[in-house]
Amino acid sequence: MSLTGKVALVTGASQGIGRACAVRLAKDGATVAVAARNQERLSEVTAEITAAGGKAAAFALDVADEEQVKSTVQSAIDQFGKIDILVNNAGITRDQLVMRMKRSDWDAVLQTNLTSAYLCIQQVIPSMLKQRWGRILNITSVFGQMGQAGQANYSASKAGLIGLTMAIAREVGSRNITCNAIAPGFIKTAMTEVLSDEFKQNAIKQIPLRRVGTTADIAGAVAFLASDDASYITGHVLSVNGGMLMG
Image (cartoon, rainbow, N blue to C red; front, side, top):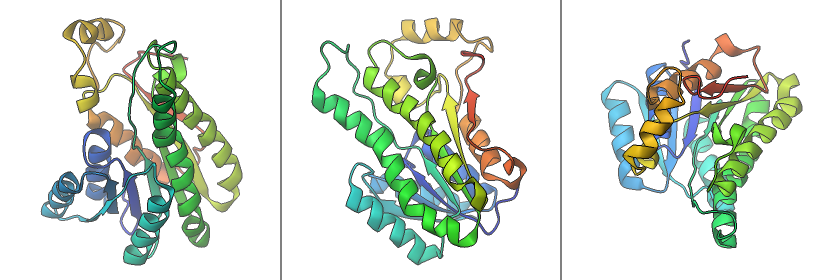
């Protein structure tokens, strides 16, 4: 699944799933533009990639800011000449029961998790159309498929990514551009580490494989869907959840 000669942009790449995706894509030969708000952590990611013989550059980016999205994508294209692969991974949570949820928390999650994906896709598509090749990958969630109490905003944003994925796949498929979503289940990240041990144990009981997933599990799925081996897959939601949700 060589990605040599390809250029990838990964949002939310400073930690967790985004970092793992950036490292894996670089390992498979892609040049990677890593983007996130934390410049210090981004520097660590680029250092890890370059130390392993890969090529990467860091771009400070708040995906909730439309002008920053535009300027960052343009800067990446100016530096690398194109963008072949987009991984929309940036995301936040603002959990609360819906009857107590603040409108600002609803808006923040939808803006960061869903609207940012639309903005990034809109900016990279011209480059993909020019080369008549592209891979758009949206990181959604099992909770965008099955819902989760206390996460109405998060579940809605992730479900929206699934609809966006299918719409984009239909719009650009004729230009050899695919658009797919990856739906992680319970993955060990900084976001899940803060959960109680009781919650974690109950979650594992719902997973047929009886383990929490790793960021490498998600990165492997991303690398596959970004490759030529997945050239006839588009508009698909690939569930990587250990069997937590089937069907």
